[in-house]
Image (cartoon, rainbow, N blue to C red):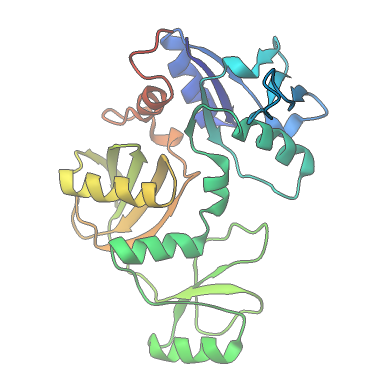
Amino acid sequence: MSFVLVVAQGPSAAAVCLELATRGIRHALVDVTRFPRRATLRARLERNKTRALSTKWAGTLCAGGDPIALEDVTGIYWDIPLRVADEATAAITGVLCTLDVRWVNYPPAVAADSWTRRLHRGTMLFGANPSLITNDEGAVRQFIAEAGGSVSSKSLLDGRRESFKVTNRPRKGRYLYTKPVSVERVIHFFVVGEQVFGLAVFEGRETVFDVPEDVRFTLSGYAKVGGLVYSTVTFSAPKIRELTTFLGSDALGDWASYADRPGLPIAAAIVDLLCPADEAP
């Protein structure tokens, strides 16, 4: 019998919980950032009857409702950043990561999905503009000259989630620089396992479209190479269904804002992975 933990906040948590409730699947919404103030964890790691050390934690988790037996959990939907600096959050996350369950996404994979790794994967599969990561002003000036006088830049300082900004001079600190991209039509792909949903945005209009098989296969592979089950992948393209200019991806990318569009059953696809059809509610 399925039991899903929804470790998320905001619209995505509500959308997944609604889909689980509609199917009659047992689930619980857990905010790991409330531990230890408003959540109680009782987890033990000890030797079993054969004197072998257990490979996973056992016990209960209580986050406002009835206690949840960790051994009853079959799937976990994860949609929050992994704050390694927060020891309490890291502790409860570490316990959950030992459970033999289905994940969307596995927290260590989300934490490892850095901009540098995404650019590397994107360059391998789609091609990408030349990029530079540096805190050396001379290297930036040379890169700007090669790019024609201006570049896009993004801060790599800890804790900052900054969008790209166009500049014609070096910025102080650690930054990622890339050639500016002319964005004509933004294409969002929502990758959920083997399923991929497409949404084009052009001049304020949104168009949901069927993703060609070859594009679906490539994008699904892009997520898998990063150890991810879910990811948004974004391109700039003159036409729908084309992978022209890779703009980036995000394992925690927003999908719930588009969940009510016809043809984008993203919550249903996530629950399908967490609770296969052969498992009874």
